[in-house]
Length: 162
Image (cartoon, rainbow, N blue to C red):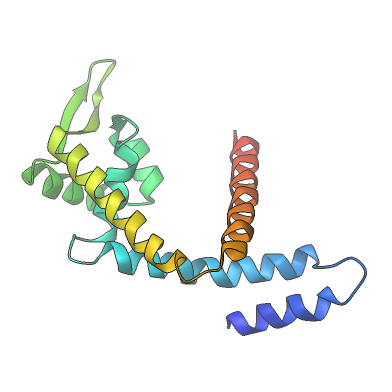
């Protein structure tokens, strides 16, 4: 499937305008799910499931109300409650009643949860670092620039949502 997007980019590169936005959008649409699957596969490497790791990543920035966490993780409340319970049993998170709204629960990382999250991040960085070593220095510079652009697109999209 990614080959079709690559072909579209190559075909359109011959024109004076370079790569069209549609061809680039197609390539991104085809490539990012593959990258996501690769990252999830790496994160599952003996450490637990993707949702747990993803949740810890969100909580690393500070405590979140359970509803906000469900929104970030795109999980239904029942599934999230089970996930929170399993992480609470491991000592990685705590649940407390929100003092400003006693109907809400706030989820926070414990010290063990912070340590586990940092360890997971270091492992992921090392796994991706191993892949990056196969690139030439020029390819790394190109990829870094491309990721800066993707980050800018995501930030612009987030601003438009507000």
